[in-house]
Length: 547
Ligand code: FE
Ligand code: CA
Image 1 (cartoon, rainbow, N blue to C red):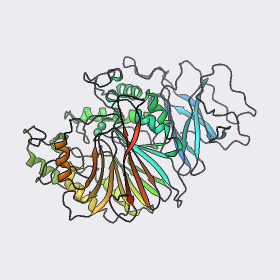
Image 2 (image 1 turned 90 degrees about the horizontal axis):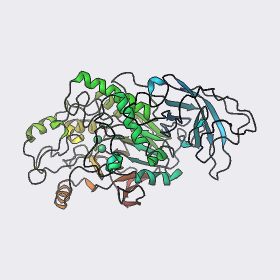
Image 3 (image 1 turned 90 degrees about the vertical axis):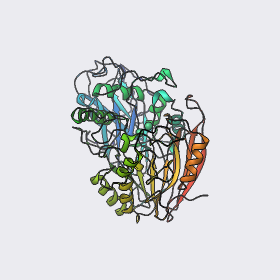
Image 4 (image 1 turned 180 degrees about the vertical axis):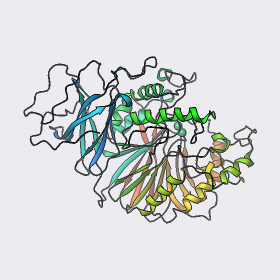
């Protein structure tokens, strides 16, 4: 982390141009005053390093994390070891400025030096402190003659303040399945949207897919399983211009799901039930690569065990609990495969009764006991008006098995941990104005969350909104008969669909207005993205409300 220097007494009016800067190899920019913190002298024996853009995240009322990674040769599976960087630490200069909406000169507030550590893939995480609350900024990085494009970020309001907030969230951006029109649309919203929550599946770990919808966006290596391969995959994803632009537009608050490591993994159990020892090594590599590419306020991991669950607050209006739904899980019933339903999903080979016994067992856990206790204590003790769970898999339950107990369908979701869910939500019935966000399922939903989704005598504890995927596709065709069956036996679900896109929530002390934004043509990065349905949650009334 960089030391923070005092604000400049004579700000440099030319600092941080609004336009994307290009490297200026010989001539420094003219300045009217000397810069108080000199840019470090860097031996530049590498090419343009800012190929992966800039990002920011996890703001507080007086600080924010600024991120970049130096990678001149970012996605090269044949020589991904150092991605074009020398094998030594590199000093990186950063500066952050107030941002004037009229495009006038920005005033540098703070600047300093950070280290791009060779051991951490030359990633940079700067914890800039001492910033004014509830303010937008522009920032950039400088290494020798190279200047990054500027990024925009902001701080949270002060504790006690409750200014209105607009946040968005989404998940699941399989690169070869679709273009990133959703990210493009979120860039176009600019400062209208204050914060973006990412709920997992930032990358997908598999190899090339012969049936890819967009063959020119194929994965460029076999299934990834070690640190250089994970780095290469993040770099492949991050070179998408709309994804980079979205990171540079506002702070992100991110968690992970399964594909950042391995499809449907649970704790130390891999998709293919590999030996736990080697899988722990793979898990450590995946977690390190995630750290290296995410703007997170976390210490760097040094093993396969790494706590990423945490909370962020928008003053006293909204308190977000960001959950880890993978690291501490017991293995799913059926290893996470869909439960067969004769006539709907035809695979009669799986024993539903065993699944029920496992799902109902309250001794199995999705979050792990420590995270459960932290969640209950944080939500129960919060003074904020809204308590929001930012977490990967849907909690509201979704059945296509009439009459089963529990009537569950997708064991990788909270339905596979039905007894655990009942116990956990039973501890949170007194938490007012609780909202659950989810992703993972490549579908949109708006639903009430009951202590037991399938027992309407149990109380509603929250409203839940599940974002459509940015680009990933729902894995099976959805027929009208399937949708009708779902509607008939899931009255707690008000909206369900498989459109790609994101959700935008406008929050004040009285209500949370939620809009589902849907991508018209996911194969087209220029596709229009339109609001297709809206909901409301009213403070004091648990669950969905309607206009
Ligand atoms: Fe996904
Ligand atoms: Ca997932």
